[in-house]
Image (cartoon, rainbow, N blue to C red; front, side, top):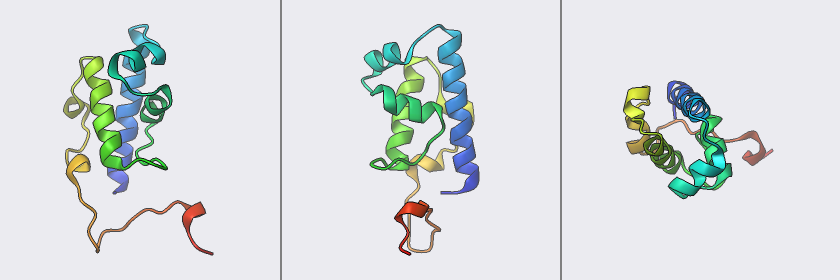
Length: 103
């Protein structure tokens, strides 16, 4: 996962939140329509690409679902298309949260 991809997802999250708020929709309303939890929607809006129990690919899929509820296309929000399809291979740099690293 590159820094550019993470920053791109943060922009997407901000755009989704701004659009939702401009339309007067609550997270509860969006959650009811798309079937995602309020906490997951909040993570997406905050631009958190990686979660404790969630892969970046599944977070992208959920963001895509969220965008569809708002009648938006993620590609128009300049989200890198390779995030959803990128496979981690042996030579890729993997970001490991500090609390998971061995001392």
